[in-house]
Amino acid sequence: MQTVILVIHLLLAIALVGTVLLQRSEGGGLGIGGGGGLMSVRGTANLLTRVTGVLAAAFMVTSIVLAIMAGTHTAPRSILETPAGTAAPAKPEAPAKPSVPLSQ
Image (cartoon, rainbow, N blue to C red; front, side, top):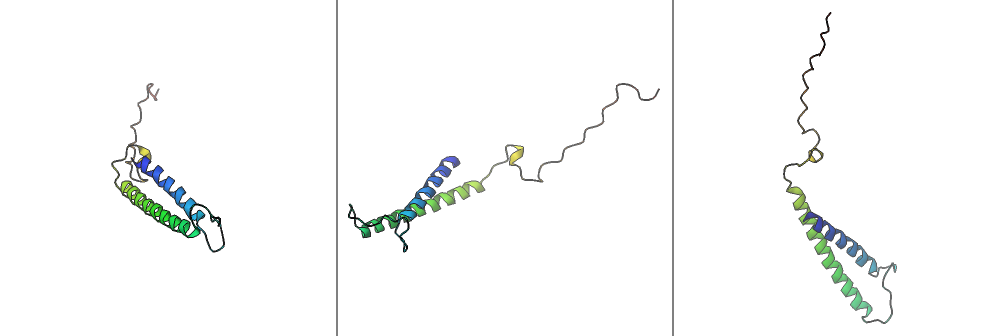
């Protein structure tokens, strides 16, 4: 489930960057530019503003959901998931008895 939300989160981030880059800025930027198309410049700006708002809201929601999911961990499943310093120290093994007597 977390992977699905993470993929959606990344797609929202890419779409949000693209939408912001399409908007007209003071210096021109990557704006859509003029031209008589289906919508007027004002209508396009309003649409892009609304789309940016919706994408930003969805991005924040997925951020909060991912943060909540990251905070609800269960017990670690492997040694790699344990925080440093919390693993139990290894017991030293007893020395093995020699198979041949050392004194002659």
